[in-house]
Length: 171
Image 1 (cartoon, rainbow, N blue to C red):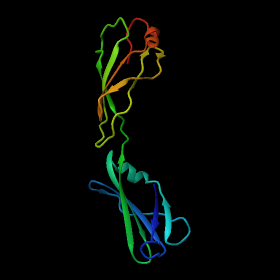
Image 2 (image 1 turned 90 degrees about the horizontal axis):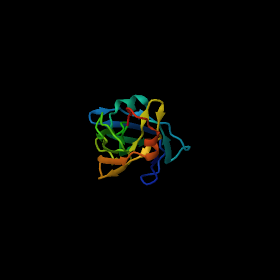
Image 3 (image 1 turned 180 degrees about the horizontal axis):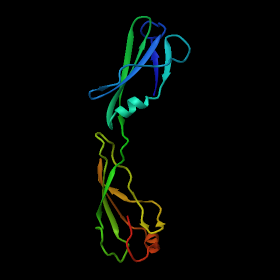
Image 4 (image 1 turned 90 degrees about the vertical axis):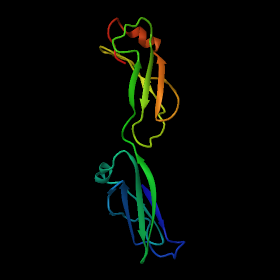
């Protein structure tokens, strides 16, 4: 993250210290020191990567980042709510059912759900086909509905279908 600490509107004193902390639920990282850049004066910049220890302590979901700056005797702060989302959406194939015997390219239907609290909408669904040493490219499936749970549907690409031999294949 990057932040600017500015005291020009409240006295113009030189910024002498900066710290940050991260909170989520009952977790509080405690204040962490920041290195000030941009010379000296009433406007200073900071740039920091959240430490691995703090990042790994967070679970997927909203967290709050606080930054504070100190001048000759007073402290001011700002905060922002961000979302950690390291878990990809889950997919369930609704049809065709496992073990179904199929003569023509089937229509794949699936349900895609993003399990992270407060997640943004699912925006993309793709499929590929594997059989023995053959693996197709990824193909885009159409999505219907909106939100964190969406239906995906697509007829298997005819080029992919013609590349398959009789026998089992994996979607």
